[in-house]
Image 1: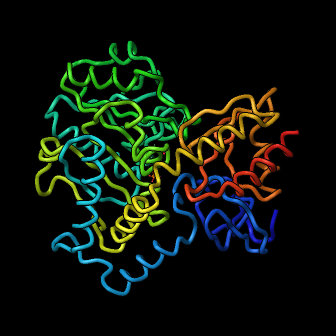
Image 2: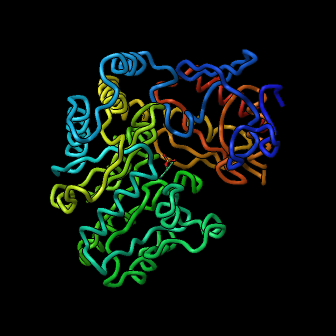
Image 3: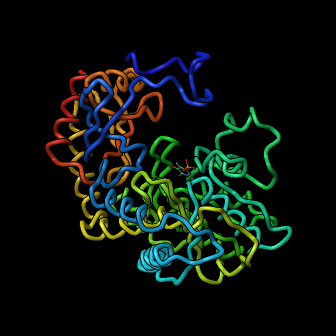
Length: 394
Ligand SMILES: *Cc1c(COP(=O)(O)O)cnc(C)c1O
């Protein structure tokens, strides 16, 4: 362990002990590269958990944030600011292109908050008695109480019982189980198109279409959690575009700020209008500094055609991984991939050996490595990363 990291249980650790002991302390990043405090170079094939899609310290995003910081950071929601207005119009335009629907956006600060807002919106839209949200086992929707309640991982609930009411879980990919869980109290289905934290598990063919049909039949909202899959990660702007469905509500965060903390929920106009003044809010909703990052990210992603890049780089990485001895199979879409290791290899051991060699990945399950490098990753960097993976698995 580096002299610059610390024992999380030690009484000199400045942080509450909610995260595992860090193995490396990073000081600097550029593009796909990171340097630790000792000056050692790494390739970042995790992208800060699918956040750094335009690369570390992207100069376009950095300039936009710096310039906004010198112009106007924040004015509160008692007043408008031109940056948030433009950024919301840009998010609405992206979702209009993806869904064909006009809609409205609420900005927040994280993925969990985006899901909180979406679930409050669903309760308001559904009315009293239609408050239940059904989501999938294996899902991840965030750590605040309601987002945690929606998260389909019972072990994460247990220390915090009792959970808020109005949440049900069904097996991911099983339409019959979903159908059986629906009664008149259910107002919304909340679903990921690829379960990211759950092991990079893409929704099976026809599943999202089936949910859409069920939502239409029963008058429920279809809320898609695009916090990890959104903003070109899967090779389309949004993961649902792979499935030919139009959601009613979309939540997003992670790559939306390329590292600046920001999230949003978008809803079709008639759904969004269920919210009235006073129903929801956040001090930092639409704050100028965060929305300057969003505006710069969308402009830059459009300029480089991030979805096409993600699809092309993802296909290249996926094919190279699949041909690597020690990799059993590769799953995922675009640049949200998992390599399932062969012959019971331990992903935690592989992760640690890769980190030692200078490659950042994540053991997303006991036997699979998650790879989510910046979309700006080069072919040479992919070759270098796959060579390290091949060495470690040999
Ligand atoms: C990361 C993630 C969240 C939570 O986002 P935070 O910004 O950590 O609150 C929610 N949903 C999905 C699908 C995620 O991957």
